[in-house]
Length: 196
Image 1 (cartoon, rainbow, N blue to C red):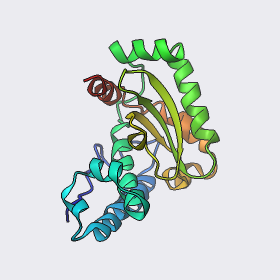
Image 2: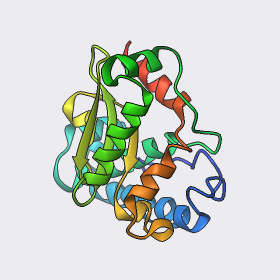
Image 3: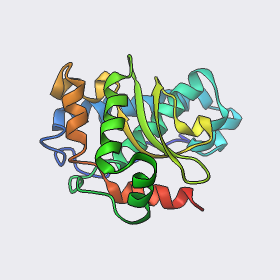
């Protein structure tokens, strides 16, 4: 199979109390895995099978895009979380957040509001343009900053399958909990890469 689901960067029970083992088993083990399975079936014998997953996301449309983007988005989302997460960003990333949002509390408030208010399913993103300017993008369904020539830095998955086992319909509580698991080291690496 050309596209392989990467392993979770933490154990299935490592994200408690933010995410339960059951939540991760369904989200990673069922939903995320299905996007890879569907994508591989869709691209079998086609040129996309020889591309990187990111290239497929940027260049494709329709069902191939939907499954490729969801496969990529979820892999990125897992990296945005850490059992040792939380705290505050440092260095150049922190300076950019102050410059573009006024501070970390303002960024968290704006990204959280975008996530909670997004109608239906989708993703709330912190992204950077080629000049390093940060912005929040609330995108529906499988959409990603990659399709808008922006570099993803951090995301909040607000498809119901991301939180419904643990939080039922309380999307706001799930979003609030994410900040205690946010992997700022990963976000900083993405920001540094976006500046090159």
